[in-house]
Length: 80
Figure 1 (cartoon, rainbow, N blue to C red):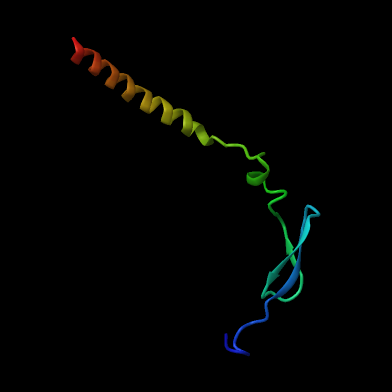
Figure 2 (figure 1 turned 120 degrees about the vertical axis):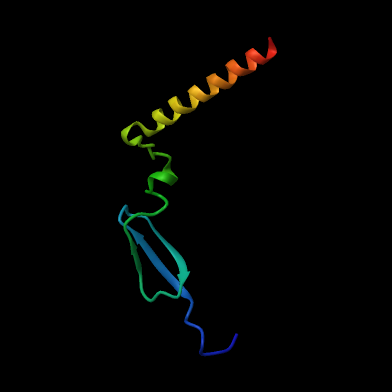
């Protein structure tokens, strides 16, 4: 590496709103303050809930249940 063209890569302290704090390395100067981290994010903690907006999942299941039933009936008719 050439000297004097790269930013300083130093240890910084990261603080989350949930109270979690850890040390990492970054070119950022000073401490880093986060609103959400891997300790409190619902995706990583397993508390995330799938939100079905306006019945989209149920509508999808009904749509493809009809096509699966039609394919099964066609397969039965072909066997006879």
